[in-house]
Image (cartoon, rainbow, N blue to C red; front, side):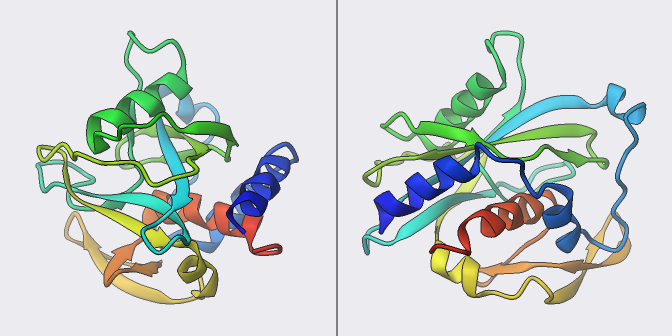
Length: 207
């Protein structure tokens, strides 16, 4: 099953992506989609969607629970990743560097393609999501300054959840209504949910 999934994803990522259609399904009530002119002020960043067999030998995708800090994305569920730095040769290198820094993984993921960019107006980032896999579960040693917990989310759970579910959350003292995925009792919303939803679009037909 795992090999079939990775082959299927590799082929799908060569084709035109659903992009905004998938993103809109998980966009919250206050979501802004910036114009091309506004995007010139945004910073570049990249994340890794790592897929591998978990301890039960089921395909899963890796998420992190961020530490609490004084910033826009404090405590959120996210993909490993971060902002581009001048020492990075490209955005794929950014994604891999941040992946290692946050998870301490002892294996190098095989990158098979990229999903659609996502824009985060509140922090002014353009996020490049790279899809990768490992044939076996790596060993992890998390960076406790940045990551509280690693979440190995069973992809079957993603496929079985309805993206029409909504909840209210408070952001910057403002209550917003947002679609979400429930991941081990935690709310996954925002840009990470939008990226995850595009992955769901790609795999739901054959998995």
